Image (cartoon, rainbow, N blue to C red; front, side, top):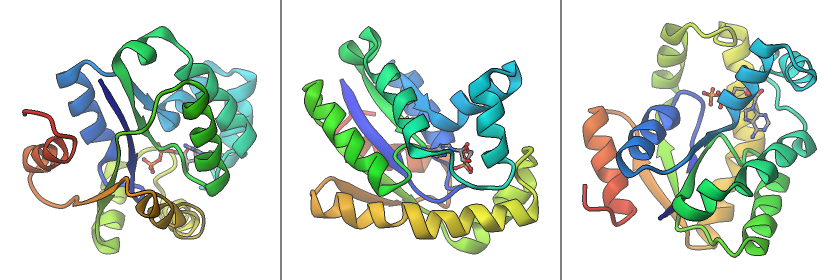
Length: 187
Ligand code: ADP
C-alpha cells in the first residue's frame, strides 16, 4: 500500500517516476494531466472545457479537478492498493479538498515527494518534449502559474511533516531509488 503525492514544477519528471513506481509496486497512477488529455482527445464536454485552459498554460478550475479526483479516489483499486497522485493537488484549495476527502475515506497520506529541478533544466526538458502545450510562451506561463499557485504547497506539506525533497536531475534509475528509500520500499 502506497499513498503518495508527487509535487514539483512542470518537467520535473513526476510522470516518469510515478509510472516507474506504479508499475513496480502495482499502485494506481492518477495523473490529472493524463485524464484531461484523454478527455481532450475524446472530445468530451470536460475535454472541451479543459482544452481552453491547457492551451494557455492556465489551471483548469479547482471544482472541476476536485470532482474528477473525488470520483477516482473512491474506486476499489485505490482502497486496496493506494495511489500515486501526479499533478494534483496544484493549488491550496485542491490540497485542502484532498485532505478532507482522504480523511473521509480514512486513507492518510504517507508522504509527499517533492521533485526539485533547476529552472534552466525545466525549460530545456519541456522544449525538447514537444507536447501540444510545450511551446515557449505556454511553458513560461505554466512556470509562472507553478510558482504562484503550486509552490506554496511545499510549505503546506512541510508543515504537516509529510514533505521529502528529492533532487530530480541525474540518472532516472537513481532518482527512482531515492524515491523508494523515502517511501520505505525495498527497491
Ligand atoms: P506538466 O507535465 O507540465 O506538469 P500536466 O500534464 O500535469 O503538466 O498538466 C497539463 C495541464 O493540465 C496543466 O497545465 C493544466 O492546465 C492542467 N492540469 C493538470 N492538473 C491540474 C490540476 N490539478 N489543476 C488544474 N489544472 C490541471
